[in-house]
Every structure is written in structure tokens, then in C-alpha cells.
Image (tube, rainbow, N blue to C red; front, top):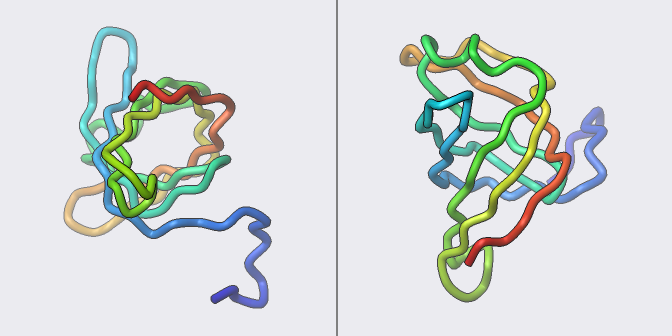
Length: 104
């Protein structure tokens, strides 16, 4: 269902999928709230949020409900668009997906 002022063109899937964000030599665990083929919104701990600025790499493990087959890992290059303070010591990150490749 679309909201009148929602400007998204792409369909978003509400899915809670594990994400690993790669910043320098660190791997930061996170999880999605929703995603499309061009964007993602995910949560991570507030302490890790400020490290994500500009472009970054991340990996998402998509469940069979989305892939319509088996679990699938997607390696992505993204750009942070917005950072929101969320409940329970979490930070929400809205990111544009610049490129991606399917690993399995």
C-alpha cells in the first residue's frame, strides 16, 4: 500500500535480514527493516552508526521468501543517505545501493 506522499518508485520489501557492514577492517552486524533493488534501510547499534558516512560495502543474506528459492548472499556498494536515532540504542541507516553482485 502506497502512502500519498511516498516518492519511492521501486517496490520495497519489509524483511528482517542479516547485514554485515564492512568499514575498513571491521565487520559490523546489522539487520534490515526494508529493501529494494536500489535501496536499503537497516539498523545497527548507536555506537557503530557514526562510522558509516558516504560510501561503504555491505552484505545482505536474503531469505527464500524474497528470492523464491534458497538463501542468497548479495554483496553491495552503498551510499548513506540518512541516519536516524531509533529505539533500543539503535541507529537506522537509509542507503542507496550503487551496485551489487549475487554471491550464491
